[in-house]
Amino acid sequence: MVKPQWDRYTDIPEHTQRRSQIEVIPCKICGDKSSGVHYGVITCEGCKGFFRRSQLPSVSYSCSRQSNCPIDRASRNRCQSCRLQKSVKFGRMSKRQRESLRAEVERHRQQQQQQHLQAEAQPALPYASKACRFRTPHLLQAPAPAYSFPGEPELPPCPTDVLPYLVCSPGESQAPGLAYQGSCVSPGSGHSDERGFDSRQPSPDQTIGMGIRSYDPEDPYCPYPPSPSLLHIEELCDSIVRSHRDTSQFRLEELQALRWKLFSREEIHAYQSKSVDEMWQYCAVRLTEAVQYVVEFAKRIPGFRGLGQNDQITLLKTGSMEVVLVRMSRCFNTENSTVFFDGKFGSTELFKSLGCGDLMVAVFDFAHSVCALRLTEQQMALFSSLVLINPDRPCLEDRGRVHRMRRDLEVCLSHMLRRDNQESLQHKLYQKVSVLRSLCSLHVEKLHWFSQRYPLTVHSVFPPLYKELFTSDLPSVDSL
Image 1 (cartoon, rainbow, N blue to C red):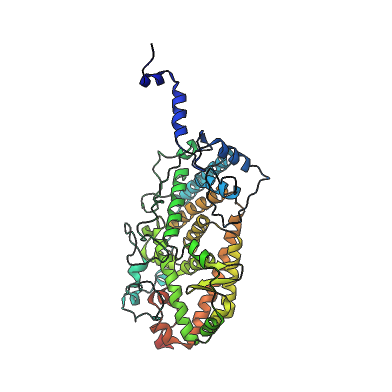
Image 2 (image 1 turned 90 degrees about the horizontal axis):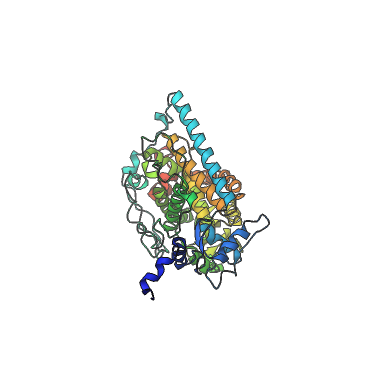
């Protein structure tokens, strides 16, 4: 007797049925027919063997196309670097990497427990004094209209009440009204294919600690963070990378298409013919536009909105310019040492009329050095958040909370660099922090020089956000 069609599968072993179901799912890397879960991700036999070979100490891959090659069944063998990059993006880790991450997580947990015990043994001391609080009453005054330049595309002006724009209360999503150039979606919506969850399959190692209540930096009753699970690390990384992309002023593909659109000699001469105060006004407006995106990025960093108002302002005042300089490297063309400015690429000679050639040369040198590191967008996002969330900033009131946020970000960066086989980058990135501080000090020094010569321009024409972030410590017009 012939068995019915529907009854033929009853004799198939259960493990064979499960394997057939897995094979229905295409390989997460190239889209070919999958053969099972290998190194924590459903992949085909080809990508399984490729990833195993890529972990050999002698193997090193590089891409000649800006690390943006498509990887599918037909093209997977054309660029090994992008194939490996896509593999680690979906969470693939070798046994050695998983064991190393576990050891780092355990070490982090022990350090936090030790700090907690020390904090219980001695009373907490306030970090900020009355003399260190910000002078912000003038922020609530309606400032003079921002200087405008006819014919130039501009962002919507910064709100007249700068303080509410800078700070963000818990539960608030973001300040409305900021238009994002080069983005096809609104800032609040995010990218349609990046909603914080993807189709990758969690490996057994990624389920460590999933049953434990995760650390919330905004929870005042959580004295110290527990050991961050792999799931928590991945979610934090994804959140920061998504925020970085949503708040980037320009998209990489647009900059790439315009990289050889240079200023003509006549246009360069027109910029050089501007007066000192006119060029400073122009650059202050452009810099303020870039800072607006950094402010939005800061508000989206997990835990930032839970900080006190003064601490939010402190971190933005001391770190926003540094993040702008980091992001500037995305707009820098190393082949001819030019930067994207006003729709075209120009060299340092474009800014000659500013009267601060040493600052511009130093800024261009820094951008060139960051480009030499060949950071991915993910790495730049994590580094930018580390630059901003710095517990060493002066006048922080809840330094412990900022420190806990910083430690989570450091674990994320370490995890990402280890996953990308670029652990040597971490030391190089931390070296850039001291360079950033020197550049920002030089910027303030030049601004002080300019404000002494053109005080009315600074206090009456400069954008309110620029004045609040960079000129609050300068003498007022009445005292000059």
